[in-house]
Image 1 (cartoon, rainbow over the protein chains, first blue to last red):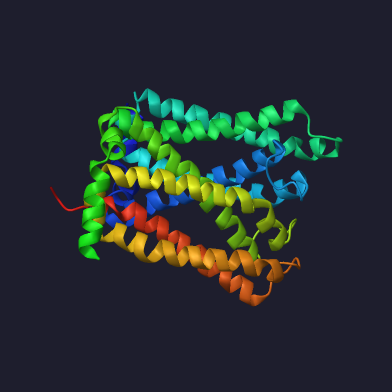
Image 2: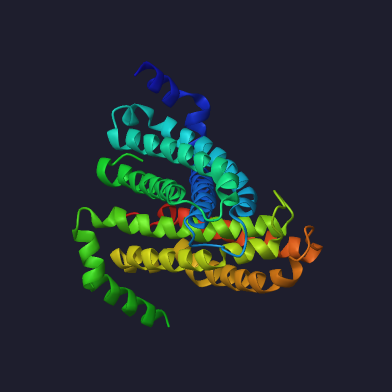
Length: 159
Length: 165
């Protein structure tokens, strides 16, 4: 509670959430950031699942788009943290918000698992069923993260 | 034209779709989910292609190859996004059409961005054959990138422009 209160009263946090220009910029950066994360991850997952971009190798596509996953993640995390900080005490016991963060963390882990294994799977005659399943889990985790994200204001009224 | 838009908004808002989403306790977040998932696919792949055209980031695929890779899901994302967007609109259509940020987004920014997007998807087949894209492709990518950023900005600003009740 002490940390949340300190964070919430931090001069920069108060300032950045205090005007229309800076507060709306945080939202814009958060949306663009997560569009990059989910867009890049989803297209890689769909390629591994065998339903996208079959004319190019999965490795080539993953190498091309995955850096934008990290870029988007940095943008979404910084903007998300600053928005969280302005209501830190209210998020302290907000279980839907906590679940969203766990889902997001799992999403990152699965995205990295897929990215790391794509070159290996690509060398096989066909991408194995287990690999497709892991890619599907990654995709579902990101859709779930968005669902939990929109559920925070819808069900708890915070944000 | 103005009268037609108002009548259309009033009709949409009164349909089972708009009323149903509003009256249900769980439907609204799922409608938002639909809109945002579609946008992730659509805008996420648009930005990846725009940046590739600008020559920023990895060059494992040419811009033409990347465009070809994402083409189908790019448009699937667009259809999902407008489906969710229309459902969101139906919950408060009259309020949306009276909102300046929504009007600019729908009547100017989205049509312009879409035209540039379709133009770029066509042109990238010739501009994007080599690892290094020509200057004109870099400019076209930048223009499209800025247009999509302006679309997202106008969308985020809708609540800030909402008339005080």
